[in-house]
Length: 115
Image (cartoon, rainbow, N blue to C red; front, side):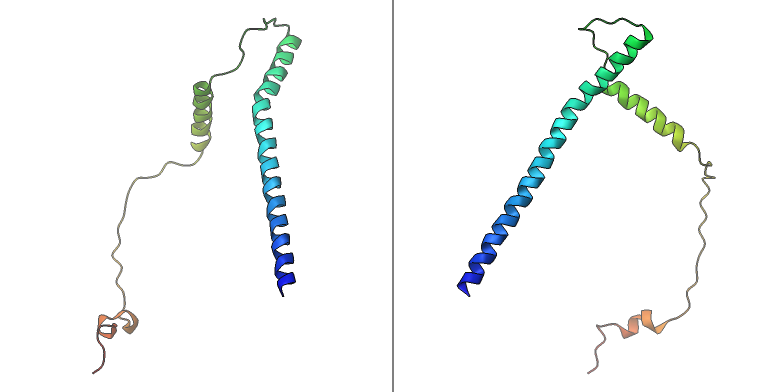
């Protein structure tokens, strides 16, 4: 019995260690990708500018600021959300009459216990 518990606990530690190491390796890989992605995009943009014949110095920054990106994204979002119809903005309230049901009657509630 003791041998089975020790084997099970060793297997549990192995599974936990392998699982944590896989998650940690995936997070490190994602950090590497997200750090290098802007560099790759700028490299692609520089190649495109060279093909078009626009000369640019090495120290000139061609990236777009975050607030400009946010404004562009918001404008695109607003443009594509205006596709649906306008609402009438009229609210109607109809009174609904309910038929009597003993299931919802208060006289049969829990507080009304027999004596």
